Image (cartoon, rainbow, N blue to C red; front, side, top):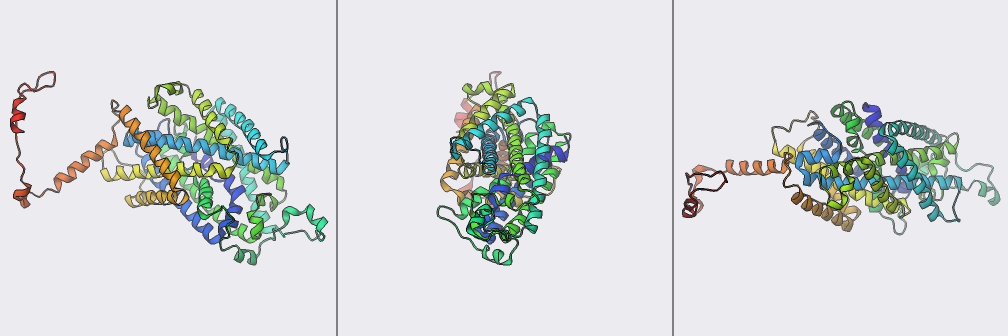
Length: 500
């Protein structure tokens, strides 16, 4: 596949989905436009800096099956790659559940088809049905996933165009709705005034409901900044990964950031605070032109498409880690055919679906993604600091400063969102690293950490000034001659005892 189909479309599918259609208006209503600008800047800035680091690593060598895991493990060793790769796998797996829940939530709001008159049970039941269909499509093959993804993206594009036209054309509550009885027919339009300077001014400041905060809004919105690593997971299906991934990802990031900025301003101007905060109806559908059902279909299709992209990528990462024998023996069934990894992933998604809401899953997804993004930035920073001869990426638009700033932003957002969840995620990464470090001692993959230790030792030796010796710092230097047997032992080890 080329840049557009293989990279741009999958990345855009992950960015333009649940959050844009279902939660962006809610974020504007809660955080206000000023703080929404800050949320947008933090989220897109972090993802953009991570893209620069990712592009440098991607263009330094061939990326095989496993995407992010392969990229980091072959640069900084299996322990580092395994810990980051597994958390990334967990992040996109949970993201699949969130996209499916978003799709089903839209379907229920649109059709009002509830099972046993229970929204919670209906959300879980319909979500599992959708998941089963997506697993079947993924099992057929990546070619079908790519074609389906293009169709889903087309629906999303049509929906966005309809929403944008509707935001400019919407005139608010119909004049026919004068009495209270008449207004019930148009209750979804209540609070939607059309573009208004008064609304824009009133929605500038924050007005959080009880239990909602800036941190929660940030955690929810950051899920619109994920998916930038999805192209790496499909690198083996690209004609020229080192060319397609950097250009396609950058194009997707810039275009979607501009679109989000436009939507923030239009939503703040088209509705009052109560309408923006309401989750009883979907503003983006209500304002759409010419028919709101086009947007409902678009939301369902785009959210389902995003879930399909992540579902097709997650098992590949898990399979790559298993094939490198990084897992304990009970998980050896994940080696070989990717089918087992697909069903294992579907089981995790089913568990996440049982949470039953976007807000419940979103913070977990965000924290896992931030740990992974931080790991990618750290990997690029260390590789650049070491200056190894085999570190020669063709992507030049990065530096130590951008990688370091990316790490700082990731840590800052993690602390803002949840200190407890951040500590748990980091400790999990450390435990995975410790386990894999012991397990992978016999493997020699050109561990980048060995290069870091060698560079540190070299720099320390170069800093020693032979002209500034002092008696307190005097050290003897010995030259010992001896014979080493075939077994590796010294023939006369007494010389070392004597010197000691």
